[in-house]
Length: 303
Image (cartoon, rainbow, N blue to C red; front, top):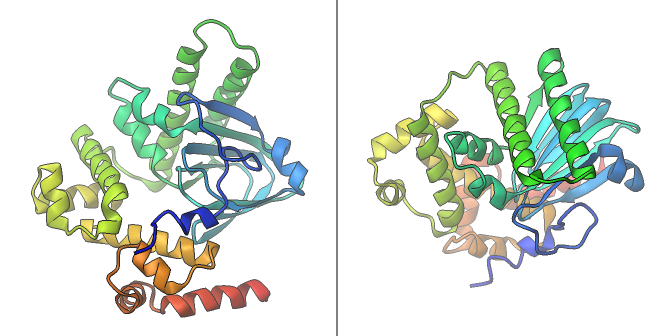
């Protein structure tokens, strides 16, 4: 069986876009204007991923055509986009689009907050979201203010800088979460639901290639299958089986879209026993075979 990391390497990976992959400081925080990097590339950021970075993109004014894995968005006006580590993303900005890009080491988000906000921080850092701020003027001003404070702090380091950056980062993510939940009309989850859903998502990330059954996840989390399904419905509006299938489909689509690996290699790297089983699994969810899915994308790109 081939190395599961071999085809992943075919998708461009950067520390920051255009910079070679390097070992990041576990407390790495960086913020810059959208124009600082995008204008150098004719306002086009080609699809890539960051292995150990979580990013927040806040557009104040302008427009962008955006790819997040296999989904495409066309956004205009004020938006905030969250990009978890590992998610393939690319942007085509309207020239002179204004906004900020915040990049944070994933390690910081998983270990830097030792209070009751930890579950909320981890929740936001694991979701790829486009958050509408066009009619939320007060929330937009809040977010801009926090990002500018962070920009100023990083530009003029002083004592207790890390503590201040942690605090600003926390309030930025909490502000984004407020706006997202308000825009989606989502009621607040209880702390134990958030905690268990985050533990399940973390376990899924490490085990999805092993094709664990729901019972195995429930046992590892020390809960019943019914409890796991209930939490998934509350947190993600789907059951645990759908979460497991979705994670495999996300990785399958990433490799069909962004690599030239054979279907056989993709199947084996995703833990399928044979390519035929992988094709049946993919078609049962997507409605087309992986081969047809890839060919359709090629046809669309030529149109």
